[in-house]
Length: 357
Image 1 (cartoon, rainbow, N blue to C red):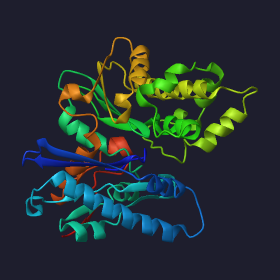
Image 2: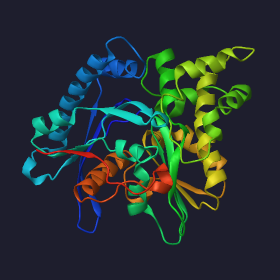
Image 3: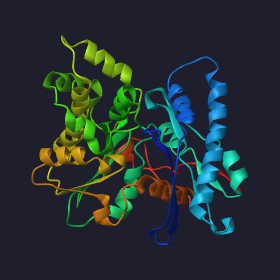
Image 4: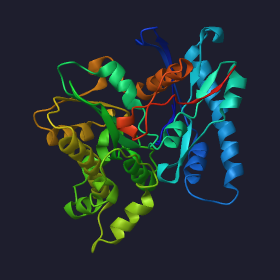
């Protein structure tokens, strides 16, 4: 799994029983080199010769994915592995235009590893009229639901998304807005760091109410689910435009504090509005390690138990990679991987394309 945070590759080795029970066996993480991260970020916007550049980046990603597979196997022979579930790196996500694009050259990955690869999970859902995202709620529903407790699972990666798991009722899920994406981009601009460790820089600033109100005025936040978001909606250009529209300047640390509050507020507002009577919120993704962000979420959700997914037995760092292992199994078993109530698709669909070993 490599997500919108553009930090690196999460790889897991998972064992899934015939009954669908999943067990995490081994993990491995490979960070992106700064040069690759910069090229991938640049490819999110139109540029000359972008088809060639994207194809070359896809080949480079396939080689990195193969290295991650080797690392997670750690001596285990490839003939014991049924398949690799490979999400790829998203460059465009535009369901309104009928497409999404994740690169990674799955054919090359199958060739390099000698293992069957399942990839391109989102396109079929979009072809069926859905958003193609989020897909992880189907996995959450399978492994984290409780018959007596209303739970919400929040994945805070580059984008934040939630899965609503009522004790009785329909499972839903959608992207609530930015997760770490703007926080990472802002600290990168001002300090050259890839992320704000534990929210320390945000904690040094003060939330600016006017800026927070302007950020919260984004059209996406008013749209009802099902919906999905990405860099197309939340990016530095949009932030710069929002800052320029203010009648004053805002100190960089105060902007960071406000961006953190914006992530917490947009997440909690979605839960309060759409997931009433929530009893527990369990957080996964990189945001689970941001102590200041977790504090702000707790402060905005009095009466709700807020923890990471570690309390449910799944390390928050490996949730999404596990989900795509499960989705790959669904594909191989000709079973659906989407939830129409989540994505808005016309019905359940078998997701993914298979590249045999």
